[in-house]
Image (cartoon, rainbow, N blue to C red; front, side, top):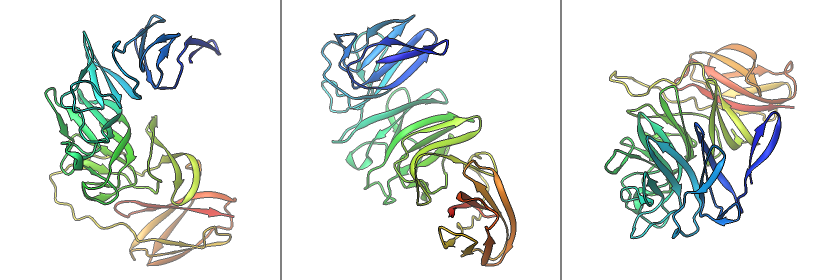
Length: 342
């Protein structure tokens, strides 16, 4: 069932016999895709559209059951991503329709696992994320771009799985455009050779790592104003089974540059005891001046300290019991860790 909310009340708008995974609205047009095979009691394989509240099936009559993950309208063309396979193949995962029947986009994704899972338009080009594995013969890994003629990789090097090479799975589950950048989340462990935990962004020229101790896969992203939120089961080893937000001391800067930058590595920090009660010991600091910020679970600053040396003892007696984030301003990249006060 798909419902709409009017004047603080929910009303049914269409009846599907199975799940709806994505809904998009373009003016008076609503697009819905999912795993359903019926729309209002009539056969319909996973794709439907409503114009001014009147629903119709978008799937071709000869289509078999598929799981459709996402749908997007770009110019006058509809694109859907999922487990779709169209004859004659051999690709799968991404199809399109302007007029007439649905067609495979380019060669689609090859291999046993090719699935499109998320769609976005960035700089007027279509981006497709999903289970796209380079080692199975695809030109892309995790994410592909349609250049109007063919599918191509996004950046070199591109996203890699947790083993840091093209030889392990790399999946993109969600994408969102914000501040002229394309943010992606999923199951990947490296961008541009830098370790990440399932979240990164593309600035149009290069992949930019985004730190943080999220537990992969990160299945969903969203921005509220300029704050990035992500779904995760753990944050820095602490079970949360919910949503985390990214707090940065600067905006998301482009990481493509013509300047020569001598970057320093991240702080190799250790915290103990965790949970703590009166004191939190820090070791592995770089030995130069840093500013230590303690934020509560809502992101509010609760304490600030100047630190110089390789070790520091943080007094936490005035903090209420709960989960906190400790940040080190003056490190590059900025380092943060979580701890729990009992």
